[in-house]
Amino acid sequence: MKKFGKPARNCGSHCHETAVEEVNRRRFLGAGMGGLATAAAFGLVGTSAKASDNPAYADPAEPALPQSDMALEKGRAALLVVDPQIDFLSPDGVAWGVVGESVREHGVVDNLARLMRAAKAASMPVVISPHYYYPHDHGWKFEGALEKVMHSIGMFDRPGPLDVAGLDGSGADFMPAYKDLIFDGKTIIASPHKLYGPEQNDAGLQLRKLRVDQIVLAGMSANLCVESHMREFIEQGFEVAVVRDATAGAKVPEGDGYLSALINFRMIANAVWTTREAVGRMAALSG
Image (cartoon, rainbow, N blue to C red):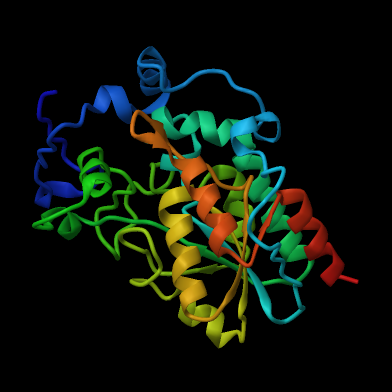
């Protein structure tokens, strides 16, 4: 495959082209419907059953691990949503070509809205952990495989940390369906995380300042930012329940990101719930 480079979107004259070895943008991460069609041509996107009917994602009939669960307590629990942004969740986003099938089969866009509405009805804090890249981030001297891809296609790009020019409707913006929920004057929008986990942002600080130690976790993407947030917060002593159908992952020749994450959710999280279960537990806090 040929090398390619692409200036980051909306980042001004300071950005430079980033060459990425062994990645073909048209095959893996085409933007919008054109990217979706390209991915389909390579067998990356197609029709599939709902996740609940997909045997690959079904819970094992005879699990070897002990069951683990988490009892939400009012005043201790918050909803944490990772990367509810256009680049992941919309056909207009640059990652849709590889995550779109998974997003659709799990109903992620609607499920995230259901979780946010339920949390607010239960007076639970809602924290957003967003992903943004600025021009100086494109000057990194070394990167992992996914970092190379994200930087080359301008994923989550903004012109600067204090500059929101071009943000509205861009791939870095929040999904339109969530804006009334997020911009209600109560939702906490943490500073951006830069790779996958929350180590570089203030999501943990915000939660601790609210004396929250239980997290209901959802968002994008399953085996990257969501799994990394789960691992870090569990290491910090939080209880974490992952909402399995409010996240999704890329499907590429290297593997199914959602399936790899689901295995680790089962092994590591304090609980793994469906959106329906999570909403029901939140509703119980309102009584």
